[in-house]
Length: 188
Image (cartoon, rainbow, N blue to C red; front, side, top):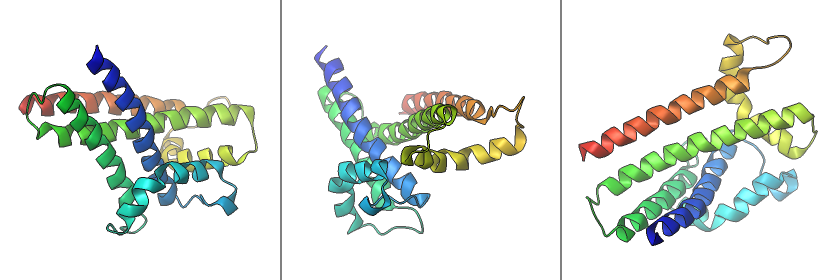
């Protein structure tokens, strides 16, 4: 029972922090303004939550083109810490070499979950037609993923089904990732 409680708490805290690091990475990749002057409250929040881990890493890890490697490494290190602590709490059973693999799969799972949540928020905001900064940010985050689907899937009766198709693709990716993770862990 204690392990399950610790696991839940670690998953929530680390998921929140590593998700924020991944969001920072993606927002910077999409060149979405995140400063105080931009008026983007989501960007300001992401900076406030992740600066403590990303800024020290940025001194050591330069960006590769538009890819903020410090944010990516920060998200991975957080996942690594989570699975390392869970490994210790489980009595250090199994090989320590499985921890980085679990962290990598955790990072990929977090990315799929974040995109799924982003698509759902985008769809809801598109239905209510809000003209807010958050709606614009969500549009800029999700649109690059919807563009290829929109080229293939036309509007049906004036309704855009591309978010639904993207959600289906993300769920399939999550299933494939889960099977790959199980296969990788069985190999060790």
